[in-house]
Length: 398
Image (spheres, rainbow, N blue to C red):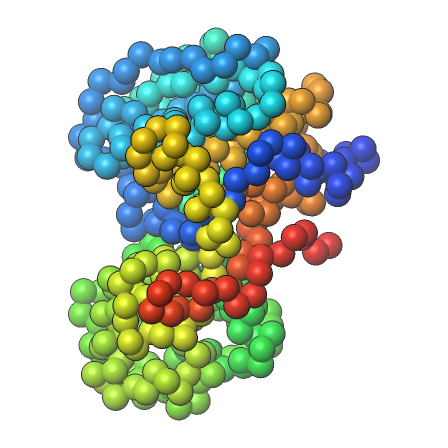
């Protein structure tokens, strides 16, 4: 049997202008501030699952869309899920006359729950599945969807679960690394060093860093991974920094500050090298660190998220989680595709149009392997917060 998710060439009628117009037709909501659903954080499933809640339906349109979230999961997962559900509801409310009916299913934070939720949505007539949130739940969801040739847009940051009909709408660390290294190379940086954590996030960053430096003709003068003890790795990198133009420290806010302190203690003068980071640097601890001032990091332009958060507060009376924008953009996207693309609305060639789509978090597109590429801004660390240095692109190059 032929794989229904095999990549196909771009449909001739799908022009660049039309593709970019899909989500622009909805009230556009801006960018998330670059906080990734980290491979070392919120993409991890909670250890304890609770019984799933009964699903609900939002909207009365003819095109049915499954939305699978860990609404009853333990800990912060359920808080994030409720915020994402709110954002999905908000997207439908702000889209003019959407022909969408959202079938919201609770997966209780487990792979089994995700498979059951997806199966229920498919049985109810869903033409596409949005979610789940956790990487471990994606294969089970995909298995249910593939049997019917139905695509999945999941919110995980783990690229290993993408492909064959699974598309990731998330903040992938490799996108951040590609953008910040490319920018550094464009302003004359040629010699690079890096310190990354010894974990899944660090492994992804390592591959992206080495590939991007090589692609731009740069050289790597030092590369170290670290665990709880950062001193040894910091000492090794500090000894090589005199020959480096730029130093990438890829970790979350608290860890980045600790790494910078370890480098300083090892004798490194961080003022003599351009510091580089990922979207996880968008953190008050980073902005408050004297050692990290002037560092550059890649992230969506934050102005859009601020506008989105203001409307969210007005509607729901609380603050959205950062990943809420993913649910909003996913729902706005499927609503726009349902309006403009007829029976091919969720076909692979429609979802992977190279021109991409415009959303709250800026420009994005799905690759044929299911991963995504984002149009990211370059921000500078300052005591008052991130300051834009280079804007996010308005279109993708050829």
